[in-house]
Length: 340
Image (cartoon, rainbow, N blue to C red; front, side, top):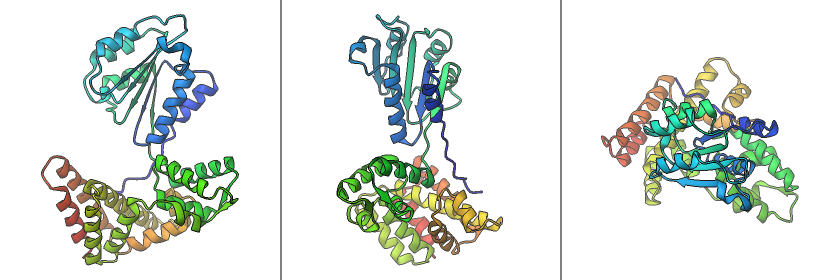
């Protein structure tokens, strides 16, 4: 079974807390979407008053894997100095992937009401005592990659602020070049706005002139070659990517995503969804041309073959991580097998 596309919007919890003046004592921000995570980190720091130059005595920052837990607890257990709250910001600690019973027990049972904690992490174990302690005293917010539909709405909002316009098809084309990483989207958007400074409407030609071609574009050409059963071209493109120092694990990740997307689309079609329904389910907004392209590629594979390909991608990823398989060889094996 394919891995269904999902987009969580738990960050709206923060917006609601701010709007209702119901700020929690503890927040944990985590997940893959770095841009949103950084945005809400800054937003909460501001709401906490931790960015106030006159309040530095009541703000502490801890970063990295070598944080002294006893020092952190000691600071957290100290009353604020001529202020309502003491704020501690902890980033990339790894506390939610390791055993931190002392800190978890302190947060759950002894954290003073005058102390606020903000954790910002890449990955967490939801079974850990730390995760459960934060849930008990505050909120955990996961930031996942956004769908194309959400990113399209974001672009439209940015355009309104800049008094510019783009046709929906041009926005879709722009996003096809940037991918769904919001930091990259913002970088390319700012470049595009600067380039079209004296224009009211941004065109496809403007996008082509200024937006950097991303790694995914090169990989997608390779994936198209695999679907077309053009093994020679697919392997040639793969070797070019390696020559450009592209990490094989990134290529494997994109291959896995493509097989997963083809499987989802093919299963939806088999269930009776029309092109519009599939487009909506895939999170493509109104961009049915992406669905056409995906279904066209999926025609080269049966459902069973796509399921097998997806299983092998996951299996190879695990073997690479455990040292049982060389990454370059694993990707090459997949390309050879699924471009026959």
